[in-house]
Image 1 (cartoon, rainbow, N blue to C red):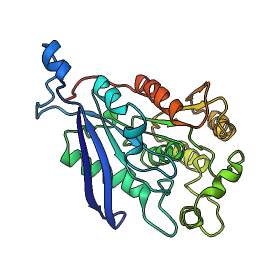
Image 2: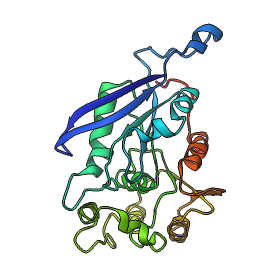
Image 3: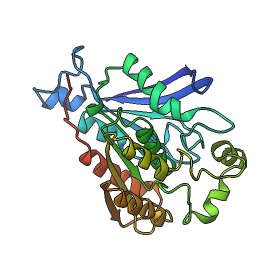
Image 4: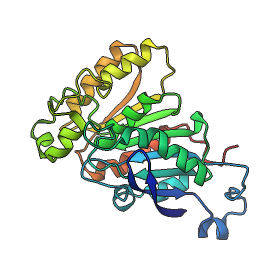
Length: 272
């Protein structure tokens, strides 16, 4: 497994962006115990890629520090790209940076140019936890032609309503709440409302990515997620949904990112 920390200037953000990239590579176990390991360094083949988003108050290091994503990526022969999104909800902020364009357009263009990553839709996935679960769905519905699958772990998918989140939203610094949601602190009726955007894509006849949502049975965001899932079902959209014992924490996310990887259509090998 190769681990790369990268800083580059982002035109979408108008500042330097920081990302961590995991690339499967020859390990000591491959070298010593496996004769027929993948040809990682064949320039004609590429990796499938998972863009993996952190939650509120986090950054590009969270997944690597608090889960075993490095090992999971190596075992599944999938590249993982982990960007920083600050507290932006991965949106085009009303009074701030354009994180939506950064995540869904600039970042994939940069990474597929610099690293051996497939550019095919069938090989490109996005997922995230909490704020990142919402951000993954927002990016995937912004550009459904780019992603074969999207997954949310404990994501606030009904962010426009936020009936369950209660005082938790008030802990977000006011400058970020205003930057992402406007002075009225609302995204209802806009494309940042996943209900609105999902219906737009259906009405336009778009091919949607496969969708997945998992959450703990005691997670404070459970009801919001289920409200969105019920709305999606009314529109005829099938979102795979799993509830497991747990709360809104890294114990849950480390365990169930493994299920997300098992659900993704991974080939567990290099792809042409």
